[in-house]
Image (tube, rainbow, N blue to C red; front, top):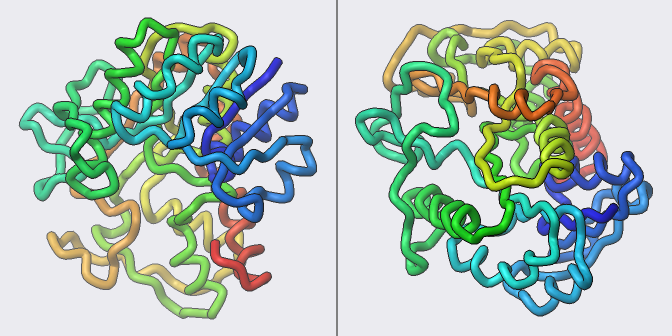
Length: 317
């Protein structure tokens, strides 16, 4: 059994590579620089290939005669997916990683808009999305990211191939490019006595452990089918609960200043600040037989420990 992961050295890609390697698969990952390859993946027998996502010929050579699963974390536009379709014809289960930013509420509001969305409850996969962007839109802008991801999804789902599109929420885990816990870890390690949290720390922005997404990828790999699946942790902690997990893990004995509600979070701003809860429904994933590795609260330790290790060793987490 063979797995190929395009962009396999970050949180989700690394977790998926580690999961497949642990299950006895042959695993190939791509990235820009060999130096970005985590030591843990190399030790697990994962092979690194310095290949850009835009180098379709190199990816075709890597796929070769085929693979059971190919996970694409680097497709941001419809054209990105379209260019790779010939190579994917020999992949049993292609997987495209998208994101929850594509969803719109009943009023058409979305996460990257000026007015925050307000969903009536957990977001299911059939919830409407933004219109797809054209290929001339820059996917690396706030306005262009989600519509470009919608375009990539549509090309995949309309390709006739058994694409699984996965929409994670706020990703956490070791090897994260921009770990959201880092701000709090740094403050706690330097001994700050108090940390402010806006909206009393009561806001909810659903977490997605990279290892849980990896478990979902492993589950869909054995039942290829064209579909869209949400990926999020089984629990829905508040911002306060998340920060308290960090505090407990680090032995921090300071206090949290739970500030009153305000439209301006000010010094209490944090990565999980949202005026209205954002929660993904994961029932469709569970009905496939997917089982989470653990709760988000439990799995936050992976990112916390990794960030601490990076800081101690003077590296950029």
